[in-house]
Amino acid sequence: MNDRVPPTAPVPLATLLRHPALGLRQVAGARETDTPVYFVHTSEMEDPVPYLLGGELLLSAGVHCPEAAGAGTYWDRYVARTVQAGAAALGFGIAPVHDTVPRALVEACDRHGLPLVEVPRQTTFTAVASAVWDAIAERRHVELRRVTEAQQSLATAAARPHPVPAVLRQLGQHLGAWTALFGPDGAELAAAGPRPPREARTALGALVARLRSGPSSAAGRATGAAGEELQLAAYGLGGPAGPEDRRLALGVCAPRRDGSDGAIVGVAVVLLSLLTARRVVAAEAERTAALVRLMLGAEPARVAGLLSRSLEQAGAVSGGPERVGAVSEDPERVGVASEGPERVGAVSERPARVGAVSEDPEGGGLWTVVRGRRRGRVRDDGPLATAAFAAGLGTPLVDLDGDALCALVPGEGRIRAQPGWTLGVGAPVPAAELARGDADAVRALRRAVAERVPLVRHGPARTGGVASLVDPDEAGAHGRALLAPLDGAPVLLETLRVWLSLHGGWDRTAVALEVHRNTVRQRIARVEALLEVDLGDADVRMELWFALKWA
Image 1 (cartoon, one colour):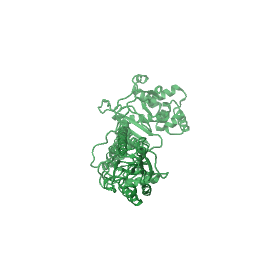
Image 2 (cartoon, helix red, strand yellow):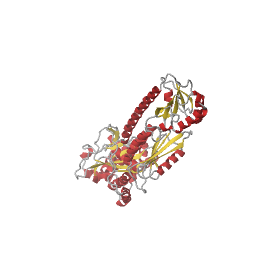
Image 3 (cartoon, rainbow, N blue to C red):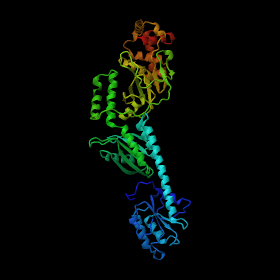
Image 4 (cartoon, rainbow, N blue to C red):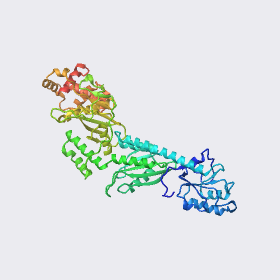
């Protein structure tokens, strides 16, 4: 079709052939049901080429060629010129000149592959044109509605805790396509939708490699597993980039391409460009990981590399990633590991406020430590995954390291379970006691793993109770004396603590400590021998629990 044709919504020729009021019938030419018709044009000129843009249903009653002059050479030349002009189809009117469609015209249309439609005597050309315009208006309305719905769903996906995969999934659903995010090196970072054959993915990767710096796109074709044709497209994300600074790219592999697909992809490109500000996100991820590790007691030398890499990636870029994604406000039931054995595993529904920083006496505010372990086989520990997880927790201070994570949430933040993760949440503590908060979070994570729940929160120590009746100094001295035989055996101490917190459950303790249950039995037997106690006695277990708290 000619480039001068405006981007209107075409009408398939089959739609007109099925129109009950028109009575049209195809008598020759290609039988493709999806032949697009963009316009209707009536002409009785011998050479219609100067008056066509391309994509028209050309209507003619054959006035320019009376029956007596209807030689085969005339119609062959006429059809050839019509095809050259890019017409979609030829509609031939029965009357007033011809009683039937000339045989020579039928043969010429078959030779050149031009669809030939017979317009019956009772159907006017005006009626045909009116039907085309009505159908175009209806399709345009449907496309606008489709684009609007897609824009709303893509924007909603971008506001979820894991926005990049959500946007890719929504885009794939609206296009019926496979969508993928490619890194600067051409590696596939995330994808959604039915996975195409390797050849198609390779071809799409080649298109990504062809993208120029600055806003650019590339298109191509590939063959599907069943031999069908696949439409490929690649789009560069982000703003202008230098020749040495390749960016992320969006790749789309679809079985077809509709007129409104371009507008939908355009919305996705803008959203993904905002979500994947690569240099900013990567630099921020490195800096926050270093900060988390320093605050939890890591030596500066062990995190210096993270800080240097973040400075290199940030370059002249300032600021940090915007928080894209809202934490759900729906209440969620989570396990709460309380300080007393009688409350271990109790379920609480008390919501805490996100970002509400409580002041401790030293003026540094309270912090909540979160420890996590990945569930399942899906793995994405790049800067985009870190940013998405940070948005879900409501804090940028996230250290995502393989299948493990650690995060610091300012204040008594409401921590929500995250898809694909098992989380342990420590009690809010001042900055000077982050080591204790981290230990609480580790224990809560072990509880969550052992009980197979998505999240366990370590509850704060209760005021009052038996512990308040004992002098802290005397309690500490008693606890240390009772546990003295276990000095120098931190593994036995931790095994005893976890075993008591799980009510002596061998299997759950084994899961929490990631050891065989026979190993747990051997360790507990060793503890009994060293302490010279019977852990089958409830009074002994209670006394040891308080000793572990006080020591």
